[in-house]
Image (cartoon, rainbow, N blue to C red):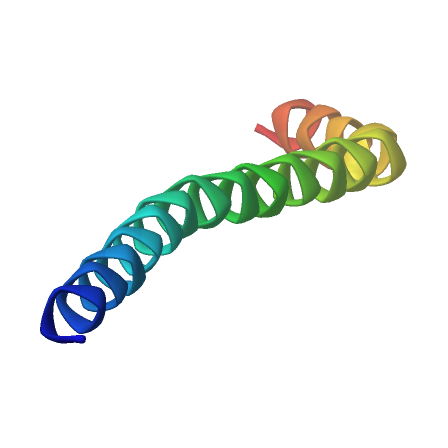
Length: 64
């Protein structure tokens, strides 16, 4: 009975270790998705605002 309890505790500890290790990978994937989303937003903003910013710099350079 005692050895069965020890082996069950060891099994549960092994499962816990595997789950906590896999969480680090999931966190890395989540950070990667956030960085990709930020990159898409920045690119979209540059495509939308790019011509307006260019015209503003041309106007400032013309006034100088």
